[in-house]
Length: 290
Length: 265
Image 1 (cartoon, one colour):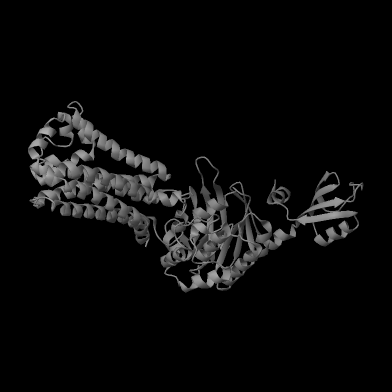
Image 2 (cartoon, each protein chain N blue to C red):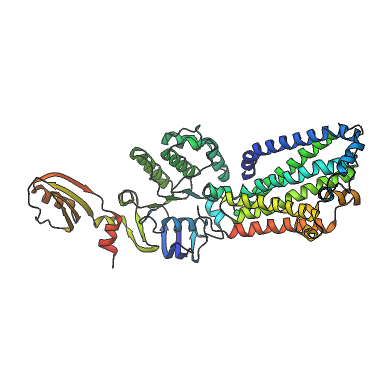
């Protein structure tokens, strides 16, 4: 069964670009990535699904229910983590979470368990929290009623790597219990780490829905090397699709097997090397541009 | 639940307004015994006031030597105007503040309908206005005891209380509609207060000049004028209907507008 089913969903704003003709579905138990550069329409899609905004045309269902007509019933089983967390500043963390739990008639005991896992102080005031700690409140708030569908908008934004791991663990536990997870991000590596399939969105339009396996095969790496002083920079490496020389620092975009790359680099007179993730723009440029 | 949250949120403001209002009422009523004693001189003094001013405050039609007349001129002006300002401030922020502070994203992701959100917030406005009126009525009754003869005609006094409450609800409902349809709290607050003060100003203008008397139909303050209520011992049914219609339309529109609204934070 499809947990989320989006059909030709379109949202037009008066001034800004919205989303146009988006169609895809998410299966039960899946971790589904939603990836695209900032401003591509990820949040607009999510807000339409949650009925914060109304679609201009097209439709969508969650758990087989219409997102506009049955918004209330849908939300009972959805956990939502917004990209920017804004809560009532005058409340304490525990007050906010209790307030949230009561809407779902959820088990308030779970607040404590989750807060402990995330190392979150429940008795601080929301206004005194750092960005990362606010995010943790958001995570507890999204998970505490054990929703069947989790909608996470840029969830790792602001979490330190250690917390990210705990957060991912929590997500996997939820999935084991049968939850479906819809995860938006503009960072490719975290989507690769976590998701089964991804939808790629750009400038309001859906570019492709792919399995992560497939996406990873397109292994694209950014390679920056610094050569010993006075060395020639006109060497040739197999698989390099773009090369920029800047003094003795050379930046390359490499496509293909990583082992092959290391092997080839080995023969160069290297002083330093950095291999990093390509930007999404680069991936788009090399795979999805027509 | 949303109601309880609003209740706590607005508690402080309610207490402050009630304390200030009751203080003013008690203070003013405490000078009545002296005022009544020196009534002759006072009446003379008041006669020296310009005719138009007397008309604005209804002094020409009311006997300020009587407790209820004194109340109508001195206290009623405060409760109607200040209470309307309080209602406007309260109602104009109650929905829009969630969008302004972006907390609406939290609320809307919970299993509640938008109608439910509107209903609970509306209820909070209503209860706060009710309590404000209750407290200022109590303060007046306590203040009446300062007088040598503290009896006022209960039915007429009740009419004045009901009129005040209706006026507050009218301004509250208009401000609530603004709160449901607009986004920036600061603008809504200035517009709501603007409406109250403009209405009051029209009321004063209509009293001052014969030429401007037609203005009275555009201001709810005229609908609840104390002098006709005390002298006729009734609220003009037409005015009551007009206020009731304004309240009902504003509330109904609030539901419709808020339900259709795209809420982007």
